[in-house]
Image 1 (tube, rainbow, N blue to C red):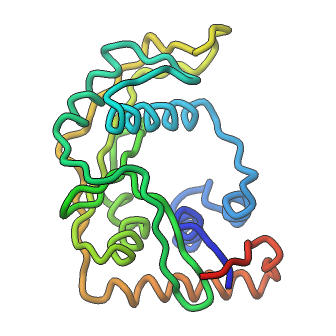
Image 2: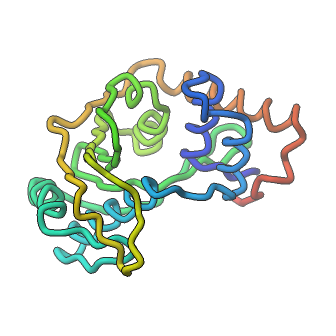
Length: 217
């Protein structure tokens, strides 16, 4: 049995749908092998995500790579205070055919799965709704409701400072309210299994089996 992450399958879905010029076969292979090199925006997004996790778990935050100021942190504090958290960063998985599909849930509430996204452009509802990330997580946890919580970064000029942690003083961060809601539907599992089947075909036709991890369920 092979292991594949939800994020890799979503990257593969974007490649199939030709979502953008960046969604190429090479991008899928980078996701599978972990060769992806994050750019400045990805680094900031990951840091803000970690900050929200720390606030949710420990009600505290210590800067790592990026030094956010209080105005940048405030939207995260308000967001965390509104949650009814029953779990953070929960590892989940389920077998689909010959694949163990796994991932991590950002935030779990009693009746809702939530995922934090950081973007540098105006959020597109269709882009998030078309994703298979929420479909997999709803199916794995047998839950009906998934929310994308979007934080938008404005006026980001890049990471040019020699200081560490790196401040981004000109950037403004806001929470895009309301969150994007996605709901499970009747044929969702069939759609999921079809994507996994297409991924399996992609792997076998290109003889990429050696790139995947073999696991026990």
